[in-house]
Structure formats: structure tokens, C-alpha cells
Length: 131
Image 1 (tube, rainbow, N blue to C red):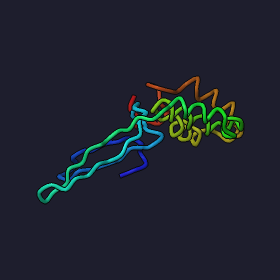
Image 2 (cartoon, one colour; image 1 turned 90 degrees about the horizontal axis):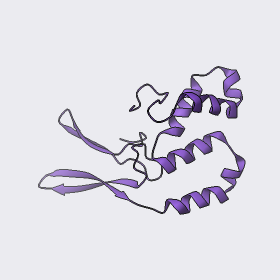
Image 3 (cartoon, helix red, strand yellow; image 1 turned 135 degrees about the vertical axis):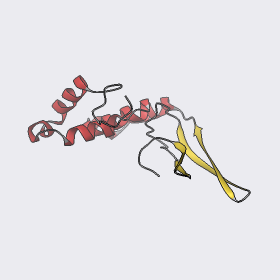
Image 4 (cartoon, helix red, strand yellow; image 1 turned 60 degrees about the vertical axis):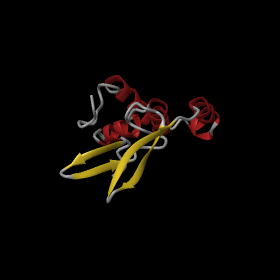
């Protein structure tokens, strides 16, 4: 599986479902990069999620020095929040934005203020997010 940003190895209906998570934007509050490790054993496979720490101070410094930060694009800022926190800021904001009227969407900075006033950790807009 993929694109959920949540690393997991789970039995489901007699099968094992594996999602390697995310190298740079995990959504499980663990900012370390994750990957799936698969090993063949006696006619079957064993899977585990492994994590790798990286220098988040360097990531922050690189972001702040980048043209991305200088552009002050709302979606880039939300993605930056996700990278630095391990939380689903960018996906939740993007989902919420799709539910808004055109006049809210047209003013991205205003939309971000509205979103921030009502949503965030423990109060995500996406109805299936872990609260």
C-alpha cells in the first residue's frame, strides 16, 4: 500500500498489508524516515517497518533559505508543517480546502487563517483522521 503516509504492517483477512510510510512526510507523529524491510523465511515473508533519523535542523535551515519559503505559498507552508511535525497538515488542509466555497479558495492566506482557527492536531478536518 502507499500514499497514506502512515507506516504499518497489519494482518487483514489472512494477508499482511504493508505500507512503508514516508521518507519525508510521515503522518504518525514520528518524523524519522520510514521504510519497509521484507525478509523471506521458510516459504513466507516477514515484514517490519524501520526508521532512520535525519538532521531536522538542517532540513529547517534548508527550507528557510530556499525559494520555497521565500515564495510563501500556503500549500508549501502546510507541507513544511507536516515534514517538521510528522502530522497530516498538508493533506488535511488540502482536503478541507476542497470543501470550501470558491471565495474562500480564492484567498489562500485567508483560507489558511480560517483553517488554523478551526483545525489542527486533535481537530482534523478530514473525517477519518485519527483524532
